[in-house]
Length: 331
Image 1: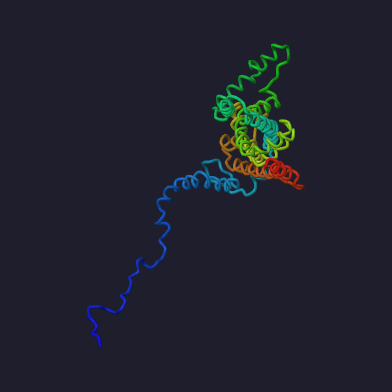
Image 2: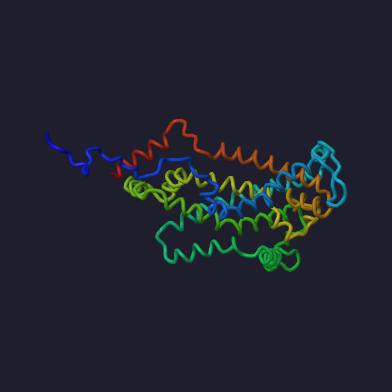
């Protein structure tokens, strides 16, 4: 019988766990508080200057308030008066006419400019900057320039007409002259901006589509109509919707050019300018809020209509089949 050394233990010692048992997860607020603090200013500013005025304007549209006295709840009275207000409907008509006169030519010229800038031309960077400058130009300075160009007595256009023996046009005193002048201001300011957006969309189109089209003998304008426009459909949809919303909320151009009156006969009175006059000139904040929400409904309806008209609805798949066939040929 062999004796066992009591100093040598025959039992396996217990292995201590190297990691502590998983406990309850830490509080995310304590764990990520630096991130929450860093983004808190945005949400505070949004709540104070974004969400609160939005909700408060809904409440004001059901009240009668001059900004100082007691607010009186009137229910739907502001909206009932809105439906019968001839000045409001005149502003709606002016807004739609100016929007139609400015948006369609603006987007058309922007698409043509972007297509030309996408070609191999010299000084391409200079042209891109030059077309974008009107968008960042001061509106006051631009209104002074357009006022000098379209002035009834001493405008550059009327001076040129007088020099060739033609009759002068009352640009800033006739209803259609006022609308045309405002539309020209919108076109001049936003055409370059939309052209840059279209140019970004053109640069995302695969070059093999153009190469295969040229191999097939397609000309420049055929390529533009059959490849460029269909492939730019998402960008066109974006510019149409944003231009529609911007056109219906037109304010700066008529206000700076014509003042709060909207010109003779209120020919330049837009919806937002009329809402501004009611709220901040007449101090009828309840009715001004009702006009603002009526504008929101109108803009939403037209945005949906534009979405339905411009969005891609490929019923027979011809466009997709043509693009797929050109890609196969390119390979």
